[in-house]
Image 1 (cartoon, rainbow, N blue to C red):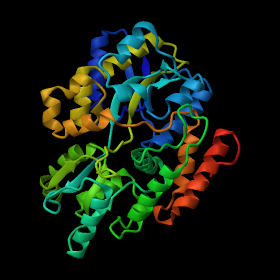
Image 2: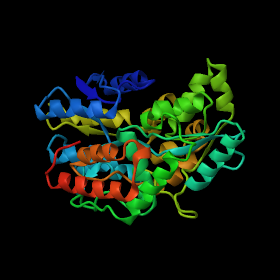
Image 3: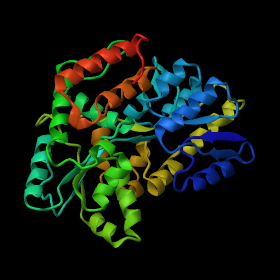
Amino acid sequence: MINLYGGASGVGFDKILANCNAAAGGKYKIVGNLLPSDADGQREQFVRRLAAHDSSMDILGMDVTWTAEFAQAGWIRELTGDQKTQASANALGPPLQTAEWDSKLYGIPRTTNVQLMWYRKSLVPNPPKTWDEMISQAQALKAAGKPYEIGFTGAQYEGYVVGFNTLLNSFGGNLVNADGTQPTIDAKTVQALTLLKKFATSGVESKSLSNSQEPEVFAQMQLGQAAFILNWPYVLSAMTTAAATDPESKKILDDLGYAPYPAVVPGETPKVTLGGMNYAISTYSKHPTEAFEAAMCMRNDTNALSAALDNGDVPALKTVFDSDAFKKAYPMYQTLIDELNVAVPRPKTPLYQNISTIVSTTLSPPSSIDPQQTADKLRSSISDALAGKGILP
C-alpha cells in the first residue's frame, strides 16, 4: 500500500487513482488520504508527522514553497540518477525549479500555476495593461454606477504574500537574496508598497479586501460585484461548473474575459508568482521505489490532462500544454505559457514559512500600509527571522 497525502481530494482524482492502481497490476495500491484544505493546515500536519518520523506517509503532495524547508530537514528524498531524469523529463522549466533546493532535485512537478486578470467584457471593452489603468477604469465604472470592484487576495494569509511577491518582483525587487541569507528590502519594496496602498485606498477595492482569499475573490466576480479579479486559472472551470446549474453564473461566464496580469511599470512584463504542487517521497517511507513509480503515474500525460480538465489543475508538463484537448478547455493557454516563462518563485529558504508569516502580518490590513515605515519593519523582522532571533508575529 502506498499512502498519498495531499492533492487526493480533487474533482476526478478517484479516476486517476483507479488508472494507476490498474496499471500497477498488483505491485502496489495507492490510497489517497485527506488533509486540511488550506496550505497552512496541510503543512502543519506534514511537519508534525515527519518530525515524528511517521513511516505511514509515502508520497507527499507539497506546496511549491515547502521544498527547501523539507529538504533541509531531511524529510524528503533527493531524486538522483534515472529517477531524476524521469522526474525532470518534459517538465516546464520554472515549475521544475520549485522542486529543487541547493542544486538538488527533491520533487516531481505535478501542477503549476500563475494568476491572470479576469474581467467582465461588457464593462471593460479594452482590458487594462497596467495596475494604474485598471484602477482608473474601475473608478470610471464606479462613477457611472456600474459594477466596478477589483478582487484581490488581501486577507492575512499565504495568498496575500503571493500577490505582494508579484508586485515586488515586477518592480525588480525581492524579499531576500538568492541564497536566502539576507533581506533585500529596498526602494523597490517601497514602490510595491506604495502601489498596494494606492489600490487599497482607491475606493475600488472590494469592501472585504482584508478578508478576501481565493474563494471570496471568485465570488466577487460570480456575484456581479467585480469588474476585475486577479486570480488563478481555475476561475474558468469553476465558473463553467457553476453555470451548469445557476443562471446568474451563466451570465457571468458568458461575459468573462481574461488577460495577462497587469504590469506595474508601463511597457514592462510583470513577473507573476508561481503556484502549484510537487510530489515528494518521504524519507521515512518503507516503499520508496514503488512510491516514486506511483507518483510518476499520477502525473503522467494522461493523468495530468485529466486533472486539468476535471479539476482545473494546470499541468507542469510541456506535452499537455500542446494537446488539443487542453487548448480547447484552456483558451488562455498561450497567456499562461507566456506568464510561466517569466514567472518567479517565492523566496527559496528553509525559513520561508516564517518570512511568509511576517509579510502577511506586517502588510495587514492593506489600507494600513505606510510604504517607508512598513518597508523598514519588514527589513527588521525578516533580518531577525533569518538570524534565528525574534518572536514570530
